[in-house]
Length: 509
Image (cartoon, rainbow, N blue to C red):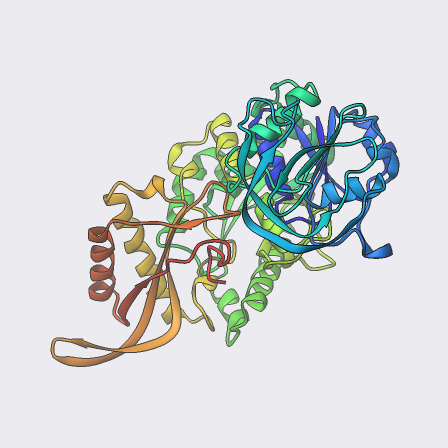
């Protein structure tokens, strides 16, 4: 396996993704992990992530034990990881005369191991304010830029490498090959990790954890909770009960679809709970998106707690939390910045009566779909667009009411129907409608209208960590707009969001 030490980068999970794409197993540990803990896992190599700090921050700068980078294991430092590596070996790291953020071109001077098989000039993605001013003792320079003398270094005797850029992001076109070179040329790894091995490990782990007790799974109808439920069901069978909460914030016909697909799998262990009035009451008058998310998350847990009491020996709650959820909500392992709270991450009460099982929390969406296929789930479930845990509440900017829910739900239904009809549903990562707290003047049948605005949001993505707005054909956009304005009374204008992530997020809240 490969160990990734997290120093707080928003891209740490992408490093893990790139490693897994090479069929190599990896685990992320905090930068505070001891050498003893790391050595006990017998890794073939260690990757030091980037991070927002400066190595010159004194005692506040995240670091790691010196023995970790002593040469006992191969190491690749990325961005901050490079600077830390250089700093530990005596190099001067200080603010750059000219910072590098975005595209840059490196000139490769030594193609040994890390840059093997690549051209001498590479486009890369930089994101740093500090730079390494001199080559540390025992190292050689592998690459430079017109801006910085040190873009990559290596100590061949100790198998220590560092790159100032981010090979894990899509904006470094040959970054995957650089990571592969580290895995196979330096660490001597083998491409042997398969999803089946993940299933075997998780099934064994869940069985040991749950023992003779019971668990409940929060079913939402989406891919994540469905895969989590089927995986846990494989581990503990009849000890698992699935609870579907109709919170009034769901897509059109969501409850009926869940019952149709999963009743045959779980029988009377699928419990449908009508909590629509309860959720709407708690959300009344609340406009702040973070408050909405936490209220919804807390309400979910309260419902689960209440329903679990009716079931014998229930001690565990299964959730379909994914890696991007954790990364955006909080630092999973390191000191990264909070982007937004996800309902099943930040909404959990401190004294929750059920212990969490999150079997997917270190997987990405495409990996979850691969896992679901391995578990035998049908394409109609696996290929559904992601849907936020707080549901339509975060697709209504401002307070949530029954009227607004009906508007956005029907607009969303039309969006899905039309992109499916156009044959582009599976080409898009997500496509949905958002209701914003704006009214505009319109004219219908020679009469003045003053009604709400719906926003169409559609993106393409691989993992939801970055996304581009989708270039939907004009006739499809036209038909979506025409149908929403004509069929959804209360909306008289449709606009299209052409923001990418970053700087925007996919959801509006």
